[in-house]
Image 1 (tube, rainbow, N blue to C red):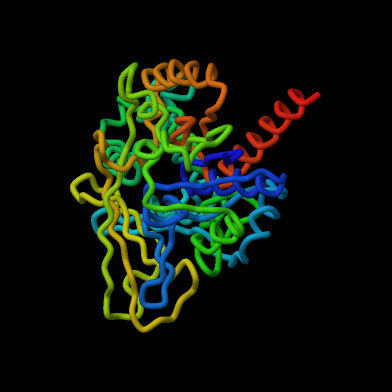
Image 2: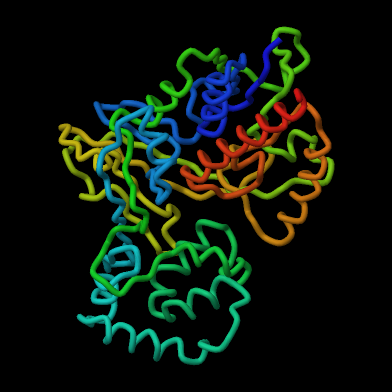
Length: 372
């Protein structure tokens, strides 16, 4: 019997498996996919590390987490500086003085603030009730209409008026000429790809791929004292309270016989009429100079049962439903839920690592208390 059966070979499962193995526990990691690393899986195409399931940039201000992941790989110094195209106009992201100059022609922070203050004056004493109100209060209607509205409605599959205000609060706004999307101190991408990082995390640990948990959980060879489940918590309980909502994605990846297709790693397309949200050119994550290039068109998609879930739709209705599933999970003695799908939470990668380490400590403390 294993000490832990870990369902899912993504970053959460890999961190948990590594830590428990280092504590002397016997772990088995299974995944229904044909590869490890979950949605951060990368593979080499034309000598380029391709982010198969969309762009992933590791960023954190947590020094301990940065040092932890650097145990398993070497990161480059990539800085995420996306661009946005609206019709025939090109804008820098995140919203900064370059964006404001491109939008209004202003050159100083004072000029930009005056324009935004004038455009948001009527909303300054209001409490936004939805994403549209929050966005306009934050940056005004000009930026909202060109750079937020269409992109967001494509991404979430619903009108901005029907989305919660907190979603837009993730977007940085700064009055300096700085195109670095993240404010975090540490940022980069593994030089050999994320798959290599997860491989190193799982060194010496038994991993079985193409293995569906639901098909094998009653088989003797998969028996474990405890199971960490990183899949969909509502699916685990056979949707007994109903389905949680997720958003899905579709990727169209092409090899192009030219050295440089768009000159940047990520360009967003913010018009509602253009069906994809962004084009990713993977070689620019690693400053590549290969003779060919690989690009991915990313299309948001409505999730339905059987599709690949990419991120939860955290609104009041879904969060309340998740709490009911969470209560079921807390009554279990031999199963633990973790990760984006198991905890129904949008996590950046550093927060996934932190959450996995926290769970390891929590589980270990309970085990030690039981032994006393």
